[in-house]
Image 1 (tube, chains in turn orange, yellow):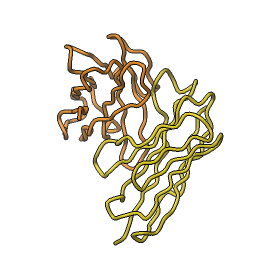
Image 2 (spheres, helix red, strand yellow; image 1 turned 120 degrees about the vertical axis):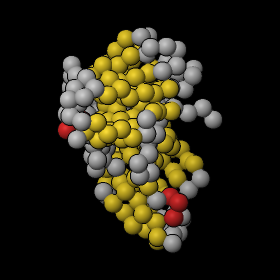
Image 3 (tube, chains in turn yellow, brown; image 1 turned 180 degrees about the vertical axis):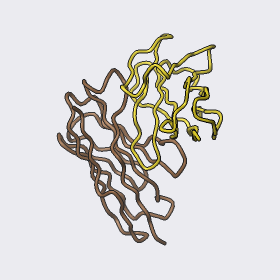
Image 4 (cartoon, chains in turn green, orange; image 1 turned 90 degrees about the vertical axis):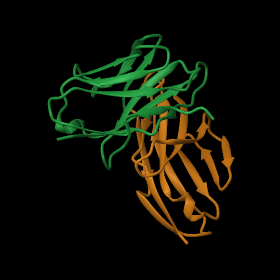
Length: 113
Length: 112
């Protein structure tokens, strides 16, 4: 069964460093998302992406964040200058055109020291 | 503003002891209510999508129902492997084109 994959599974970085989180959505899906979940808190929407551009973003998704689909399979989230409060699980999700259900990847646990 | 409240926060059941989890929601123009299961350190795993009041869906020991104000996830004769956090999420006209608004979840523990 097709699934969303994410790399790395864990990342530790120093405050102020740039990180890139990678996702490979399900192959025939057209809409892509990033969510985050701070430990013990709820899953929060960051950004949605369709047709090679951002379709919606939350207040969390400020100028430090960017997304890109550099090729036909990868979808990346970049944090330019990480802060302590960026420590969280980051989930990628995708959805096929005309469908409603988002399928989530296993997540990347980001720890900013 | 969209609101999703899940109760209880945590639930401990004996194996075989049936129960229900609640998800109360306030959303402008419901476009779907979603149930996910989340194991520790893992991503949400899709269970059900409900669209309109009166709708019900079943999968193994789980049954999801929907009214105009809340959804229930009924667990019949649970087994230890059903232990997980169950997340409810909605998508509405204000939530955005496709993104989901999640509740904080109910952490279920099933004791053998």
